[in-house]
Image 1 (cartoon, rainbow, N blue to C red):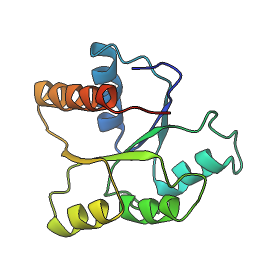
Image 2 (cartoon, one colour; image 1 turned 30 degrees about the horizontal axis):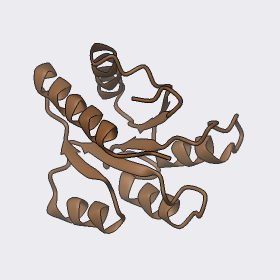
Image 3 (cartoon, rainbow, N blue to C red; image 1 turned 90 degrees about the horizontal axis):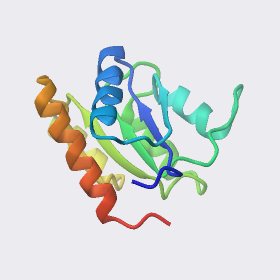
Image 4 (spheres, one colour; image 1 turned 45 degrees about the horizontal axis):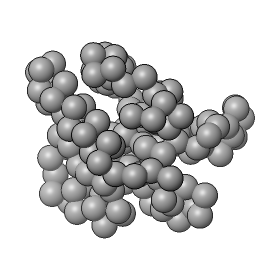
Length: 140
């Protein structure tokens, strides 16, 4: 994947965030990876509120659904209403298998909805699927 493309991971679970980092390393994905602990933190990082703005703006966001302060669906609403961020590709990476979460996410134009597997090998396979997806789409 093009190393100039940065990725934002919005994940409140430290273990899951470490698993994503480990899986990226094993898959040789060396893109800049920023981590936010919830939707509010992610919005602040994107907008540069009380911290340095992520630059360039991430092309891809990996998003958990179940988080404190601002959950994934609320975050999706916020970025889809913002002209600067509405075109960012978002892939939901969550433990939530709730039909209402899937429907809400797809209604907000997510690129995919992947259930977080517990087993490390399954997690690696999920990240490999993401890498194939990123290589198939053309990101301007």
